[in-house]
Length: 423
Image (tube, rainbow, N blue to C red; front, side, top):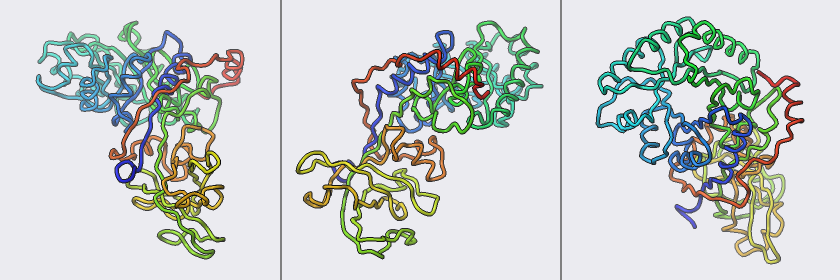
C-alpha cells in the first residue's frame, strides 16, 4: 500500500444521505434544498456526491462557474444548476447551451449592465433564461445594491427573454454576528416589500447558507443553499447564539487514512523537525507518516501542535488502538508523531510499521475531527477540504446506518428556538 496508496480519503455516502434527510427535516417540505458543490464539491467529487444528493432529495445545485455547471451536466445529475458568477456569453457548442435549452440552467443577475448582456444572450438563442437576482446587502462581493434592485426587477419583469426564477442575498457572517445578519435580512426584506409587484409568487426566495439555515427557521424562506451542512461540518463553526436542534444530528462524511512508514526511538533532549520546535522530554518512539502539507495536511500556526492522530494495528492479542500527538513541524510530505503511549505497538514486528493512521475521522468529538485539525492551522474547514491534493485517491462507501434522520424532539427544538435562535 506504499507510494500511491499510502494515503486514501474516504467519503461516506450514507452520511451524505443522512445529512440531506436532516436538512429536509429541518426546513420542511415547502422549502427547496440547494446543495452548493463549488470547486468539485470542495474536492470531494462533485459528480459523485451531487448524483447521490439528487437521489436523496436535492432540488437544485449551486456552483460558481460555467465549467462547474458543465461538469454536473456531463455527470447527468438530472437537476437544475444555478451558476453564481456573472456569465456574460457562451457559444452554441458549449455545454451551457445544452443546459439552457433543456431548462436546467439558472443564471445569476448581478446588475443592470449584466442583465442587458443576459437578455442579448437569451435572444441570440431564442430561449428565455431563468435568472436569480442577487441583492448585495453587505457582502460587497456580487449582486446589485438594494437601491438598484427595483430597477433591475422592473426590467426583468418587462423582458420576454429573462424570467425571474429567484431572488437572494448572501449573509457575510451568520456564523458569529447575529446583529449584522439581522440587518442584512432587514435590507433584503425591504427590497421584497418595495418591489413586491415585480416578484412573482413562484419566485424562489433564498438567503440561508449553512450557518443561517442552522440558526433559525426565519432564514429558510423558499430555499436554503448549503455546503458545509451536507459535509456535516457546519455546526462546528458557529461561535455564539442558539441553533436549531436538528443541526446536532449532522454527521461528518470524510475520513483520511495513511500508515506508518517508519518507527524509531530518539533520546530525551533530541528535537524533531525543521526549526526544532519540539524536543523530547523522555526517550520517545517517533512514527513517520508519509503525507504532509503537499497532500493538504496543514501546518500548525501555534507553538505546540495540539493535534492527534488515531493509530490502529492488529496486535498479538487483539486490536491495538491509541492516540498519538503530532510533533515537530509538518513537512511537505511527512508528519512525525509520538507513539510512546500507544500500548502494544512496540511489541509488533517493525514496532508497528504499516499500521493504519487516521489523520481525520468521522467522529465530531474526536481529537482528529476535521474542524479541529483545521482550527489548529488557523484555517476554516472549507479551505482544508479544498487543500486536499487530488493525487490522493477518493474512495466512496456506504454503511448500514439508516439514511433517514432520527426522530426529532420537537418540544426541545421549539424551546431552543423560542430562546432566541440567533438571527
